[in-house]
Image (cartoon, rainbow, N blue to C red; front, side):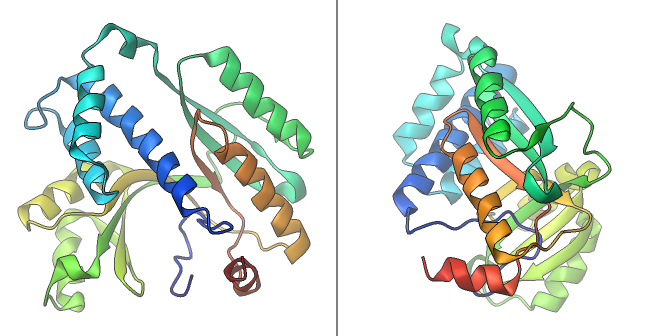
Length: 252
């Protein structure tokens, strides 16, 4: 995990690459289906679907899987899918924002509440964490996609697209924009013919909280439990990814 992003969600775990890939596919399939349902199956006239297809390609999703998800969006059963968000606190005051997509609200509410309770957390009301997280546009680009571009010049050029921060990691760059400039940056990158590995709206904490290792590991177990639920897409939190915690995760 060398070169980890100081803002990005913690992605780790016990060598479970296949499980993680499956989870990413499940989330993107839902995105494709909902985008197709709400805006039509043509990516040329549906920006949300175009973005979902771009993310699917970035995750190396097979073409036939993408096509089935888009086709499903035009079927009768796609109307059951709904997005739901949950806000609350885990142990030791760590704020947690859980995004889900579900075809059964009662099941999802019960499952999320159960996990908060199991870890002595508190499920709050929507909007209760608005002072902790900012909605940011986050674009991840593999460095190989940039070719011979000078990164300093590239960063300056992206200011026109609403760039706020560019993180330079080992093998990729991560661009951050305001929520309002997400579409502007998407258009700028398309104009520059640069394909992103992933582009999405994320909940970025304004500040992060460092915990002792044992307490941090409890938070990671709670995140794992959320992410085991098929209805859960993403878990955002304000726990700091300390060097000590990264070192421990690299042992797994």
